[in-house]
Image: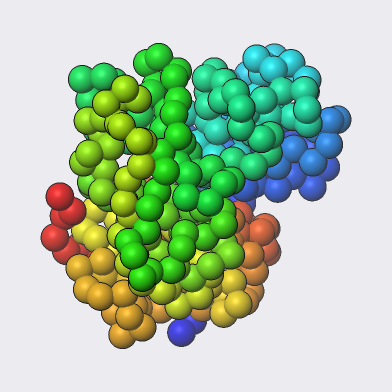
Amino acid sequence: VLILSSASAWDLSPLHLESPVVSHVTLFGSRAILSLIRQHAHQEYSLVEATWPERPKPFPSYVRPFPNKEIQTVGNCSHVQMAVSSDYDGLSHLLVLDTGWLDVCPPKVDHYELSGVARGRLTALVADTVTLPLGSRAYVAEPRPGVLAVLNLPSGRWREVSLRPPPLTPPLSPSVSLLALAGTHLYLASHHSDTLFRLNLTDLRISTPSSAGDNSLEVKFEGSLLGAPRGLVVDPWGSLYYCLARDYACVSWNTHRPLRAESHHVLLQSAQLLPEVHQLFLDLQKQLWALTESNNGSHCVHISKPTIGYPLS
């Protein structure tokens, strides 16, 4: 299946960076927050703001350090060091997962420091948009198998939750690197495995470190994807999207049906448009986009329009 899509590219030349690599995008209205891989200590910026959607020349657009250039100094641990992921908490607050720098700066989320976590190993962050009596939360993928970090945003306190697969099911992947939040469900996957798990957030949302007992929760084994995924996102109607690196394809699975090949749809397959997918994301109209290696001058490729169905509870 080949559906030709067109996209313009962000012009990152005003940043004066050598071969910048965009690894993550978060949208907020007409703004896009880009996480850039900091490849060496002389790279000035790892977090920038740009116009959304990408605009071809000569249409006006902008790109600039976010929130400004003064707080991205390498080695200053209160500054942005290595932004790898970001999300909005539904209250107009941007959360940034910063994996720190070498052995100098520890990981942090926004200004919340995650002491005791190995630098550079955290890979994914999703904000829980449900506001609880105890405040909002965010979930962070941990490098250790079967562990999820839960961050309480008002206090900055965080704790670890152990995830238990049911008996007679495959174990969790050695490293959960993809998280997708949909209603009361958090989907967990890995770049290194085709297994997909789902965590019911109902109990986790009402628990506290003192009330959580052994701090362990059971996750459901959904089944096997068509291959190890690149990118993972769920729309409000229950379609889960991911890409397959080996096939240069992006597919959708209807979560209301069993996880089987016949429950999938191929949305786009193209080695030219999808050389390497870093992320899948939905815009404000719930259209699906892929953040890829810059090809033909483009960073983002439009995959599909939303498929309307029944909203998730």
